[in-house]
Image 1 (cartoon, rainbow, N blue to C red):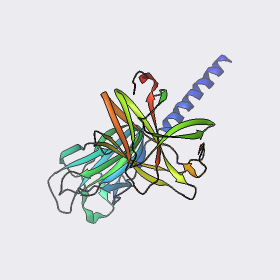
Image 2 (tube, helix red, strand yellow):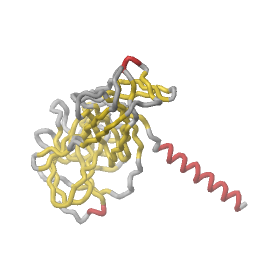
Image 3 (cartoon, one colour):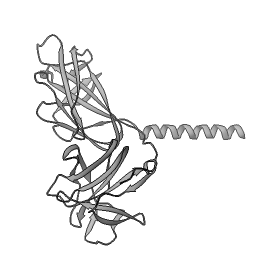
Image 4 (tube, rainbow, N blue to C red):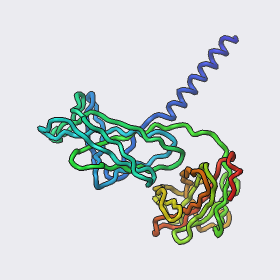
Length: 303
């Protein structure tokens, strides 16, 4: 009987492990703009790559944490010989540009193009971008001219580190708004381009920001909006967010509006005292609600 129970326990643990792995299964991500497709045939299977440009950004929207694998192939145009060099530029959440360069790349022996008039693919090159918790936008461009390059993007979800978060108030004046979610009252703060949200925090720590677009009842579908984080007037990061109307959250004292589903991102606060200004960039959108959270272990950090 005990052996049977042990076998059942091992089986259940194995199933749980498989389910956990499948829930974090990697997946291909399509850019949200500049989606010029280059179909590449590898081992008899069609693979979708997307052209990179020195003029147009190719943007990936993804929810972290996890790793973004960037797989690229340069292209040998017909009758071209020798080897190729190229460099990819990318930014994460509107931050400083990073670069990945390759040199001496030869023709691939296993890949061809569906459209043979394009030429021949070069050998595969790849690199990884680590992404933390929350929404992220990664924008890619070619850093130089002359060599055609296409890329594909594979996201490998990671596991969030469990920790307890506590509410953290912005600086005054800020307009508080009470929302009801899961039968509990949660305080957000209304802000706009004219009245940004300002917060002061001591680092090093993480500052988590939840935002909700404010919808009128007649508004339908998905709403895209952009949030910028500034310090001393300098833009640090820009986040492109997307939300629909929340089905479980309502206003406590306003029946004319419907809050959107919460979108989140995390600001990595370096050592020292910092004052951040959170500003919506879309003047044609309604006001936005925001809520700051800090890790409970950082309760000693004061306004």
